Image (cartoon, rainbow, N blue to C red):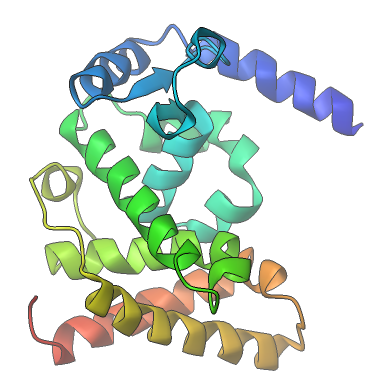
Length: 212
């Protein structure tokens, strides 16, 4: 069954690759020095460095976390990006094209921050999408940033701000783990309750924190 699901996802991904918005994202990212693999391994097979490659899945995870604010889906159900109810909220022809480069830049910067410390490296995959969502709220000073908000040339949070936000993310992860009797942060990261807790925490953050 797993192989069948994988084949189905791959087939759907290939069908989406020719969408107008996918071609536009590829062109825009090229102007930013990035290579968008709307066709699986298209640039990878041309020996482009990995840090310059962006897959459709990665872009979907970035936008699901930062714009749609469902980091639990980005962590646990990335294949759902190709379902109609998710795909069109992520890849919309009406979204400013600049939003996509901001989203992937923020997600990757968040990941770099988490992997830079031995204290967070092991859980970087579990924290990254929730922290990126929180960071987008902090960057825009808006509880639910619009695509146009994210398309602006925003200043990526400093390490100091990332540390501040991460401490709040970890508090909510621990709360959910204790509330639900979970011992694995992987399960907490995939729980929609965790996303809801972080959204509420982000709202309080905006009310009480200074800019910057």
